[in-house]
Amino acid sequence: MLQLDKIKSSLKLDKFASKINSNLFKSKFSNKKINSFFSFCNTSCQKSTVVFNKWLQKFAKLFVKCHISANFITVFGFIIGLLAINFLAIGHFGSALVCILLNRFCDILDGAVAKVNKPTDFGIFLDASLDYMFYAGVIFGFALANPEQNAVAATFLMFGFISSACALLAYAIVAYKSQNKAHPNFNESPFYLGGIAQGFETFITLSVLCLVPRLFMPLAVILGIFCFIKAVSVIISAYYVLVISGKKSKE
Image 1 (spheres, one colour):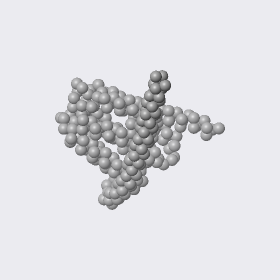
Image 2 (cartoon, rainbow, N blue to C red; image 1 turned 135 degrees about the horizontal axis):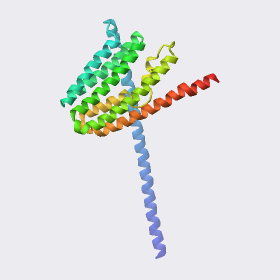
Image 3 (spheres, rainbow, N blue to C red; image 1 turned 90 degrees about the vertical axis):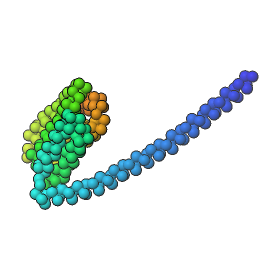
Image 4 (tube, one colour; image 1 turned 120 degrees about the vertical axis):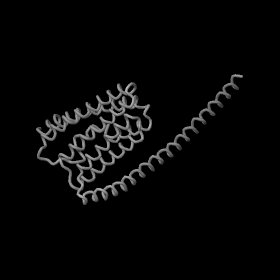
């Protein structure tokens, strides 16, 4: 009886082991499919980005020929973006989303036009300043849409925006003061340090909130936390650039 029980238990273990091996094989096979899917998505995104950039450059050159400056596009996009506050306040989230999309398109377009005409210090300042004002205005619009539910989360998110904006502004002042003779690189503006809570993440969050307004409280809190992390990362970056790098250069 004991031998029979041992044989049965060993057979059960063998079946269990074979099931595990088959599951591992399936997982490996599925991982290959997942990896191929993501690689396909990556290549597709890269190709679409190249095509989009080509059309954007043609569009930017057309604006330059018409003597439309990047600063004009920045201000025009900002005015359209401010209309989102009114639509959010009256509950027209679809119209607010259209204004947000147009504002973001103008933000991409003014950068392309600036690259054709060569960027300026004031253009970098204006673009970054109006971006933060636009985002703050949209948050204010969501607070007006439902003050009882959204006011606290909107205040927290605004607190995060102000923290990251102040860190960026303080770093920009010191960095530009110490490098006043160097022409600024448009793609490496100190306004866009930090790595997270950049324009793309914020744009996606605001777009989702326009489609699903009831998610404002949790998403606003999450984005606010990311803004605080960005502020800390900017402070760390500033310490490395202004203190550690300075000591290394002296040595």
